[in-house]
Amino acid sequence: MFMISLPPAFIERMSRILGNESEAFFEALNSTSPATIRLNPAKNVYPLPFSELIDRQVAWCPEAYYLKERPVYTLDPYLHGGAYYVQEASSMFLQTALRQIAEDKPLRVLDLCAAPGGKSTLLAANLPAGSLLISNEVIKSRASILKENIIKWGYDNVVVTNSDPSRFSGMKGAFDIILVDAPCSGEGMFRKDEKAIEEWSENNLRLCEERQKRIISDIWDALAPEGYLVYSTCTYNPGENEDMLTWILDNFTAESIEIRHEYPGITNTPFPRGYHFYPHKSAGEGLFMGVVRKKDGQPFTMKKEKRVSQNAIPKLPADILPLLPDTTNYTPYLAGTTLGIMPSRHAEFIQYLESKVGVIYKGCEIGESVKGTTRPAHSLALFHKLQKQHTTRQEVDLPTALQYLRKEDIRFEAPRGSWILIMYKGIALGWVKEAGNRLNNYYPKEWRIRKF
Image 1: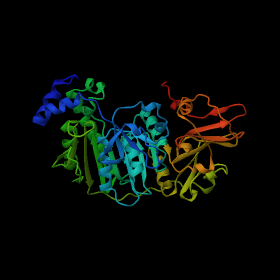
Image 2: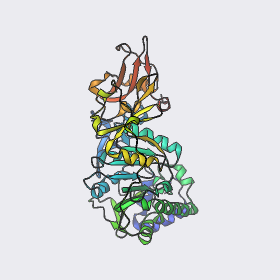
Image 3: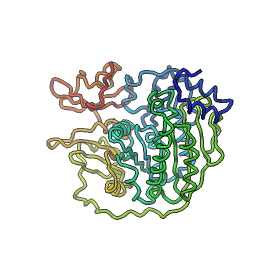
């Protein structure tokens, strides 16, 4: 019955929990994981990626689609231009939860364990206008991947941080919503990741439960009064799921919140209210999600940090200005030689945030100061508000796009000394510069495609 080698204790527990459904559950673990993508609503993708492979929409996320088979995503320029994100379907249930708890006003949201960026890109695209998302990852190497995916997504309402959860504890009441997609035992990934099976043990379950309690304790004070904690895992273990919600309700002043839905493949737990995704009942991997609302605490008051003087705010270069949206909504900043913009309504909070945690990206980096001139940043090319009509653009075919993404030389006629935006089916990929007898490829070296 079991083609993949599952831990006996896991088999016994899931057989007990699921009863008559257990055989179907274990059969599903031996099946192929569904392939799903979620479109970037700001990139106006047409034609749809893999249009010939699209099967149906994901019921709880209208921008997402199941594919009939898993393509080679790496060789699709749309992916590198941020036209879509490859995300597991169950985790997109966050969109259903968000639409019920997010009031129609600007919010500050913290995605605490954000790498590689699936839930953060979903949040960035779906938060109310004027909101700010703090996308955090504690592990440095994973934070770099998170930053890359946020840049590709192209939104300016995101700050990427690389800090331990405890660093947020002093920011009392700062966030209206905190998402804790908690590090867990990963049982929901068993059919996709053999390493998750190898690392599974009863002792590891207990370690995960203790770590989750520490994380929640660290960030609880940072949640605003009447704010929402969205808690999720990719495991089936009750100790990391329902029991963790019960622990929160027992140890903090909070209430369990219902996520209303009409999707029959989701298993609801009555109290504390939680939502299970099992692969034999819904087309996706294992996931658990629950929402609690904080019922005490004091409103956030920001300690006045030393203000940046008007003289310290850099002037935007004249050749970059036409490429930007209405700059009255943005505050320019200079970090070393990197010039960027961030939403003005959040500039003071972002400055305050930088005094508390490690910020590695904010708003949109638009250029690099080099010998008195400004070299346009790769993130500017992917910025969804880039005023493309003021750029010199070159539409390329698939072979040329892949050459560019491998950071190889490409050739075409271009105005002398110009910066050219490389486009593939209307999606920007990055910059080249005409340099006499050649075009210099400015695609980031560390992002280049290595697959042929």
